[in-house]
Amino acid sequence: MSAQETNAEPIKIFGLLMRHPDQEGLIRKHCFGDCGKISLAGCIDDPQTGGLGVCCETKCPWLKGEMDQPYGETMSFGKRHHIYLRAITDSPDHAEPISTASERQP
Image 1 (cartoon, helix red, strand yellow):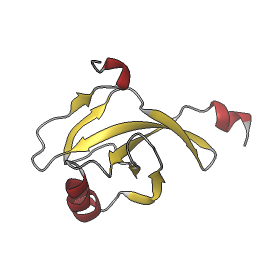
Image 2 (cartoon, rainbow, N blue to C red):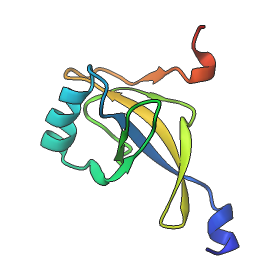
Image 3 (tube, one colour):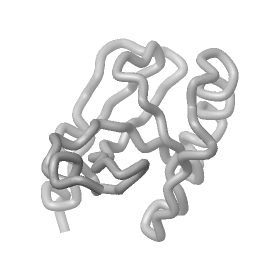
């Protein structure tokens, strides 16, 4: 990997909470069904969430909310990616930020 690739601005991707009871059915219905652009090959193993589906789409018609700060970082194809958690809904209105761990109340 070149120094240019290592120092490049991270690519923004979205992590979908595949195992969350409120999200699992919606992800199956919309991300795999209506949209079809979720990447199973890009599944991120995360012990805190039980696994994240990877979405690279910046515009989501089913968006409920997403983090305004990265949840984490990963390397893929020699490039850094920042992961932002995203929640979807059956009746999208407008995006709302999802709180980060540091913003949550104890």
